[in-house]
Image 1: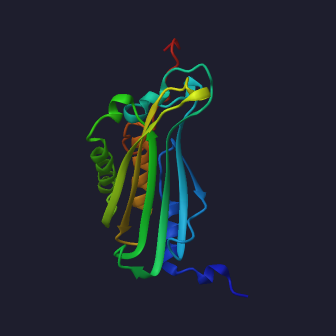
Image 2: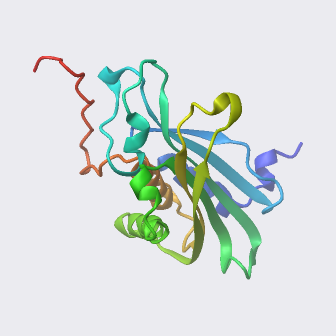
Amino acid sequence: MVNALDQVPADFLFALGTLRQAQCRGELRLAEIPAPARLAPFAVALGAEVIAPGDPRGSLAVHGPAAAALQPASGSEDIELATGRFILLHDPDGSAVWDGEFRIVTYIRAQLEPEMGNDEMLGSVAWTWLVEALENHAAPYRSAGGTATRVLSESFGTLSDRPNSIDIELRASWTPATPDITSHLEAWSDMVCTFAGLPPLPEGVTALPRRRRGQSR
């Protein structure tokens, strides 16, 4: 009997192993999700969420794009600050479009503060976050491209009491220079946290939970 893993290229198996070695921030909920079947012969996909607990005792210290999502609320539901997808594609025959045998395709979405949603430089800032994250993690890449989109949501009829919201979406892809994807996933996970408004942390430092209003020191 032929083992299914025998049909998987060694380079892709190696890349999968490096993904498991990635050390992502603890605020990120990361899990494998179904991978698209038509983009490449071999693929793996991860979904990510950054959640602020509805209970203020455990909420995250948030600033920047996602701060608007953390306005005081009477309920205790968790608040999704950012969400994303990380997809690793592999074609053993290579691709002229990718300029390589691997391609990373990503998507990130987060809610914005209203004043940030009107900033004409927002798209270039989002792209800068991607480039800086890859550089900070020394993740070698080439042939990067992407699109940043602002999404205005307005509610009507029975939902007219909902406030308008503005989201930022970044869709990007790049070709890793080697099958070692560890630094690429770590860079991307940091970028999701940046979109969520979480401050950057020095290595080995964990963010403190926000203090409940009125809680004694």
